[in-house]
Length: 427
Image: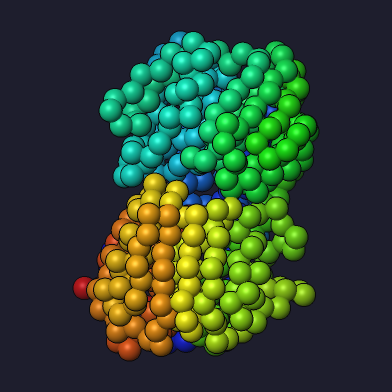
């Protein structure tokens, strides 16, 4: 699907989707608990559907139930993993979180399971797990790429060491499962742990579900075995990584109010509030989060702990005065697409001034963009960032492959229109 966006300043109130990161974790914890749980306020998406599908394959029973809020769902989960005698297949679609979180869960289940995926997921690195598998005699088989991956074996207590500079998702996968095995374990990083806030989010989620882990420091965790997840009722908070698009739209458009966000969240992407303020933007978060039109100025932005913000930060920097330097962003080259190259290429194609570096971007601010045709790169964050940039184009902006927002935010284009965006499907 291609969409045609006509330049128009966005304005109004939007309820941001629930945190996809927390939603994955809550659903997995509920599926690992013996008994019935309810997880409320989830914004359905392709990634969430992939996690639910695999949890059901492993033995959980998950039912989507009605919600009072539009665009939201609650899930009833009857937890418990079951060993089956037949080889199992797990389709992760394009969700990196689903894949990396659930590989250890699949091993824990005692099944032989083959993980599959589509798009760039088949090329995203899994080497930290391979090292663990070799150390612990866990059988795995793969092709020259990451997927398909067949794995079976046993998780045993002991010391687990893996690099922390590839993705924190490997740590989350092990933290979700090691508390359930028959002895204590130590999980530690052999490098400085990047995106440590995502691991802190995992620890908080585990605690809410009745599992406790001792954090010695970032990248080092003592895990007591023989623990059990507690069934219950859980509510997922709003997603700062999705709110970032609307907050940026408020900076560049008129005024936008975002509801559903939790103050003092453990989400690393809450840093978008301070990053915008550091660029000179006006944000008020005393009640809901309000974004006001502002003249932004360039600065150096370290995204080591908030890599998902890179595409929208590149848009904000494009319309800031002076130069912005985005650093420590090399890992985003291995997301749904090479996000550094994609956002630079598409914005440059319509008049931006961005230089790629191996680990970042150098962006010289411009006043406006020309409009034209750009690609969403089959990446939800690239497409949504380009949609925000359309406000400052002098002509129509056509985004090719705009359906990719279904991965995380299926209602994005509806919300875009509710805020005054002029959007139609091409053809």
